[in-house]
Length: 162
Image 1 (spheres, rainbow, N blue to C red):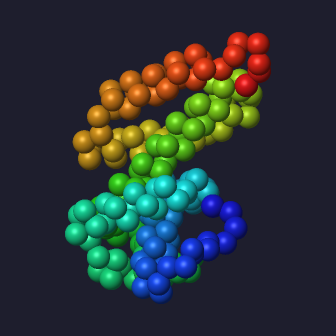
Image 2 (tube, rainbow, N blue to C red; image 1 turned 180 degrees about the vertical axis):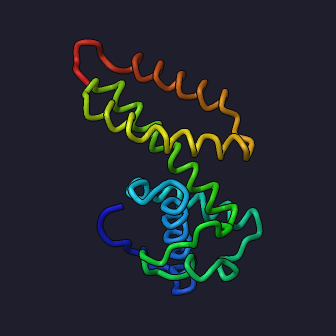
């Protein structure tokens, strides 16, 4: 994400809770998928992280000190166990980024998107393997993406360039 994070009038405790999930998800992405992948972090995945954390009964106060620090340079150590909510949200974020790159490459046909997709593909495959271990229905994801592409083609006038 670029820019500063601004809260929309949350209570201090809620803002801290959100920021812990934002920073924790970002650090989980960096530690599992590389520092460059952190640039793909988005608010939807942070919200997913909060949901998963709550559903799994995880408390941010139980996370390691690196995940509780706001400083970006404080990363979890090698082999440190991440909370499952953050691990899952990080994998979903990378999966969505890979899908976005593939969609851009297909829609525009530009080399830079194909190149970015190629460079990002090992990271994408690593996230996909992680999500398979967690029970991701890959066939459902593939089917949904195929349906989405069909809908995009139907609704876009053929004489107007994308």
